[in-house]
Length: 220
Ligand code: CA
Image (tube, rainbow, N blue to C red):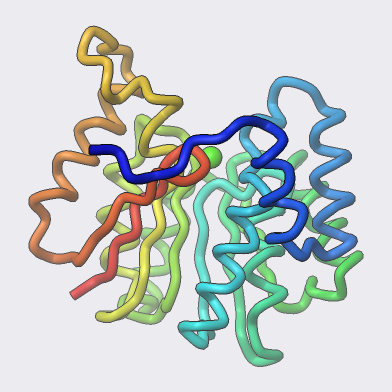
């Protein structure tokens, strides 16, 4: 039986209003990204940013890595929670988006804590692994092209230390994963990874039906 509360916009707006403390640079990032139109759907929700920031603090995260930076909201949400000696690596394919992201990190005084890497992310991750980054990260976030989700997951499993956390975004894909007649490439890729993770003995997991669904995976 469903135990999660369902509610309309007014309750949701109330929850975000009282539940999210949004840094002014995050707010500006969100508002300006919304003005970009349809692509703004690629930005995480403010309550998700707040959640990731709190998780980073709870875990005393020193090193964070993400795939799919877009205009920088998720990286900044975590960077603001890192100690001064903490560091975030932000991977994206678009120099345009990365340039926007850097602006918000600078605005929040966090630019020294975040390194943007503009390249196909698998390539960047392979280079990091070759340079000795295996087991060096406390917290990883996957939120990029869905066709490569499994490739990103496998590499994050190498980069993250035992006991570290991998968060995967959009695992409910607006509900499409539950519609078995939807066999489009993105839906199929997410559905396949979800099933794989369910049986994956390398991780402890829970799928949170929050925002567009996030899979929390703790590396064993
Ligand atoms: Ca996303």
